[in-house]
Length: 244
Ligand code: SAM
Image 1: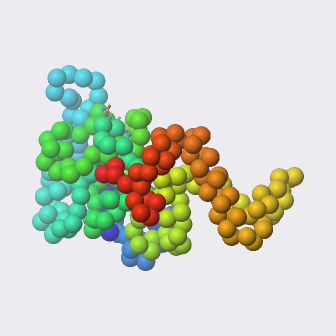
Image 2 (image 1 turned 180 degrees about the horizontal axis):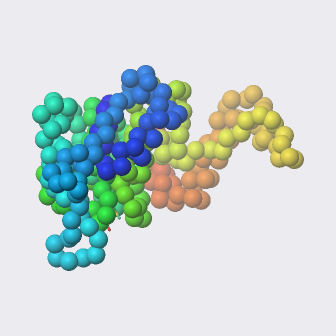
Image 3 (image 1 turned 180 degrees about the vertical axis):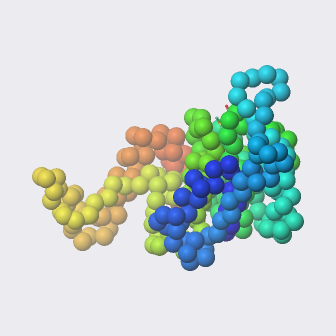
C-alpha cells in the first residue's frame, strides 16, 4: 500500500510514518509513502497556492492549478497505480469509521488531499476525488491531522502491519462491540485489584467476563452500536455489515 499525501505541510504529515507500528511497516516495506507539496507546482515567485473566494467570503481558497499540475506530474512519472482511490479530507465528507478504514485498506494506493484555509477549489474535487471523508463533526484548521488519522486507521488493516494479527480482530468495533477493559501486572496496585476471574486460568470464564464487560460498555456508551448489535446486523463472523 502506498499513501500519497498532497499537503502544504509535508514535514508535519511525515511524522505519522516515523513512529511505532507505521515506522516498522515502512521499514518492512509493507507501507510506503510519497508527500506532494502543491507549492512545488506553482508558477509565481511567491509560490502562491491560495486566493480569495469568488462571491466574497472571508478566508482563502486553495487554487486549482498547483494540484492539477501535481497530478499531471505524478501521471507523467507513472506514479499512479491502477488500484487507487483519491480521497479528499473534509468536514463535509462521510464520517470515518471501522468499515470505511477496512474498505480503503484493500487499495494499492491512496491519494489523500489535505486542505487548508476555507478549503479547496471545487473543480479539483470534481475532477479527482473518488471519495470524501471526515474524521468527525468538528472543524480542524487543516486536513493534515485528518490524513494522518486515516493513514493510521487504514494501515492497521494491511496484513502483517499490526504485530499480533489477532489484536485487530479483537479491537473495538471489529465484533460490533467496544473492547473490554485490560489489566497487566501487578495484580494488586495501590489497593486496586485485578478482577479475580482474570487470574483464575479458566478461559471460558475469562471469555464470558470479557464479553459481559464489552456488552455493558457498548450499551452504556454507544447505544447506536448496541442497537445494531442486538438487531443482528452482523455477518457470520460477528463482524458488522454495511456502512460502505
Ligand atoms: N470551510 C470548511 C467547512 O466549513 O467545511 C472548513 C475548512 S477547514 C478550516 C480546512 C481544511 O481542514 C479542510 O479543507 C479539510 O481538508 C480539513 N478538515 C477540517 N476539518 C476536518 C474534518 N473534520 N475531517 C477531515 N478534514 C477536515
